Length: 153
Image 1 (cartoon, helix red, strand yellow):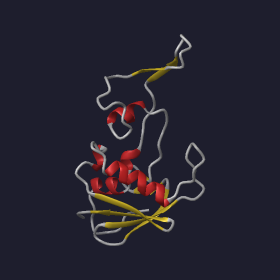
Image 2 (cartoon, rainbow, N blue to C red):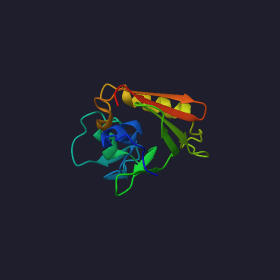
Image 3 (cartoon, rainbow, N blue to C red):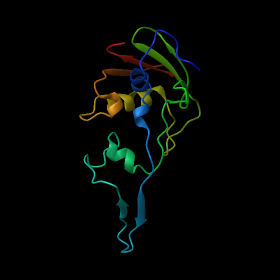
Image 4 (cartoon, one colour):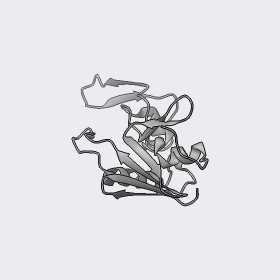
């Protein structure tokens, strides 16, 4: 699925689609041999942001992948992940249809409301993900759809 014209920068697409939520695997971890219930974690560098999941600390220490709304193929075109369809509704607004039947690790169903809340949290964080740095993003639910609006095209 290709994004419609007019031309949109890659940074705007990445920010609008929340690709900053992705995560990597743990570098190394083991169960404590002392039986104190602690997990020991080895990292390539000291954490700078208290292992905040929105920063590089979080992405380098996350226990597993956090799916994004979309992914990019080798040509840079957006492909489906948690969003199954999207269309541009104006210069600064996108409507995304979310995949049905997706649940969080605790059994809570993915909804436009909780997706909007997660994106709002990331966009308004004191130290937002790099992909959202400098981007003013508003996310809101509209029925089962997610509406994303940026301050500038």
